[in-house]
Image 1 (cartoon, rainbow, N blue to C red):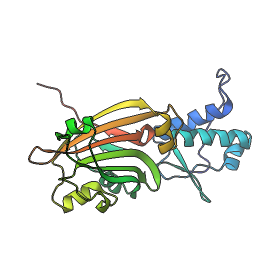
Image 2 (image 1 turned 45 degrees about the vertical axis):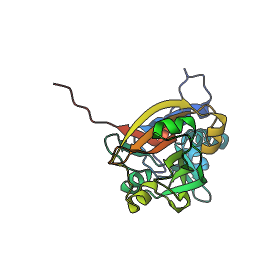
Image 3 (image 1 turned 30 degrees about the vertical axis):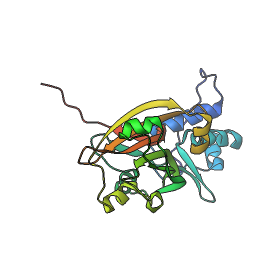
Image 4 (image 1 turned 90 degrees about the vertical axis):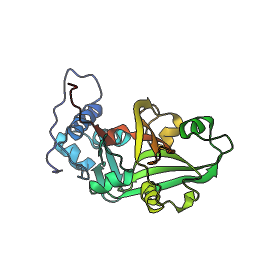
Length: 246
């Protein structure tokens, strides 16, 4: 992003603080595609000079964008537009595949990998008996070292016996053992971040998130994966092609 491309005029009819007006303008520009992923924002000093505001006001405006997940701070480098994923709803792809297709580096920060007893919900979704065991994978999903989502995946132990063998991509590992999913049903809804989710994702409590539930199936029809994903809503665009019924 050009360091001199910021345009802003305070609205005399807007009673909100000046830093919030600036943050909204920059946020609208980011969401409308004027600024591109991985482009640098002007520094606080440069922004204050361009807009004729104090550095404190410029810093608070940038803080707002960071809290929204639109901007990431890179120590010693500056402030950059955060990654964004456009995901077609008709394709069954992994998080890693989506990022690699768009030139980003996928990563995982593991929180838990274990063989455990499934919850009643997991038993029902995966068609398991109460005496079955499942592999539970709990992790933060990263794009270019930016936290994009908190994810919990549950698979029958008959599908995944060694959860510690999984690297950045679960689906890539499953392909390697000939147990990749053939299809999946996915539900998406909005929710507000609880205190625990806010801490995991580094966002304010109550911030809007996308909550995605996916149940994937083998070619045989056997349910083989239940995943709950809690995503930064500002990082995702879901695209669906629709045709009118005739």
